[in-house]
Amino acid sequence: MALFGRTALDPDTEAALTLLVGRRPRILASGRGPEGEAIGLLDRLVYRSGSEWRQQFWHEVERGNWDQPTRRLRWTDVHGDTVDVELAETGMLPDLFNERVTASIACMRVVDLDTRGTAVITARRHLGDATAPLVWRISPGKGTSPQSVAGNPAVAAELGRLRAEYDLS
Image (cartoon, rainbow, N blue to C red; front, top):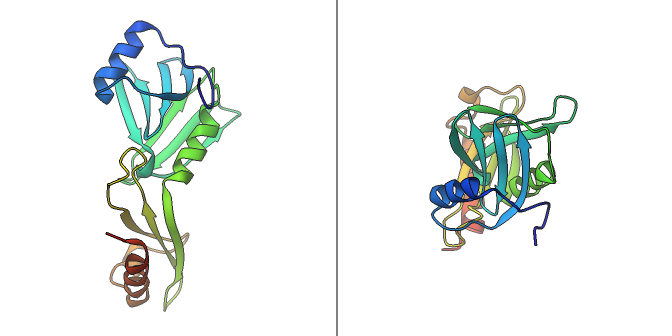
């Protein structure tokens, strides 16, 4: 039984998904758009883009949202790439997207810079691998330049403190 929606896939889609993921995946939610299925798994979103299947791991989503008026799921990944998936049939996929991205966040702290602005320190967990180490990132806050954050002593000190607290291995 699905947590968030339907799980029935056509045999070709299920075969392609199994090949991509390396096993028969546990589908938590799915939606459908003009380009085909978008499928939410425990550790990633798999979706059609043209004739290709693509995947986005939840812990690598920097930010994203569901835009109801345009029926688009949009996100920016940690590399700065923006993705836009149109969904005519959403199922519970927008809710799952929010839940899984949020679940990947182990820690998030906003650090006031000693000059002006903020930095955001996050630790993200890979939801499909409980043994994977946390992935730490530092991002400039709204209105703050990346140059202001790079090498900032307040950010470095807080990152060190957080890693000592959260990196248990």
